[in-house]
Length: 90
Image 1 (cartoon, helix red, strand yellow):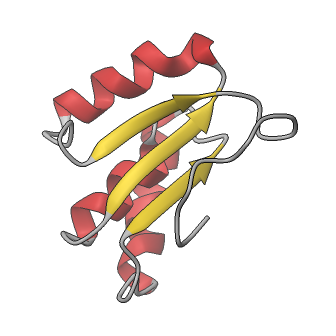
Image 2: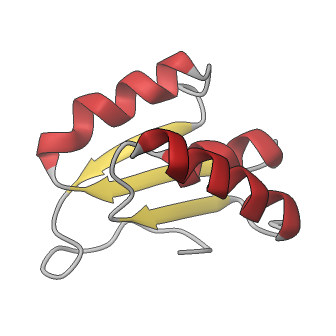
């Protein structure tokens, strides 16, 4: 799942400009393939993944693996019930 999502996300993030955005909130972002691709392509961007606590360790491992621990954060919660983290692109 990670591999196909990550490579598709790289392609998407190379086509879409995140200029003017500073904080991406990836709702239901799981282990972070989209967030990581977006951060790699956009050095000004900070990313937050909001998903269930059960996937937090996987996402944090991927942040570390891709040297993005300083620019990425995991926010545990249910996007349908809980308050969403602040961001300027979701």
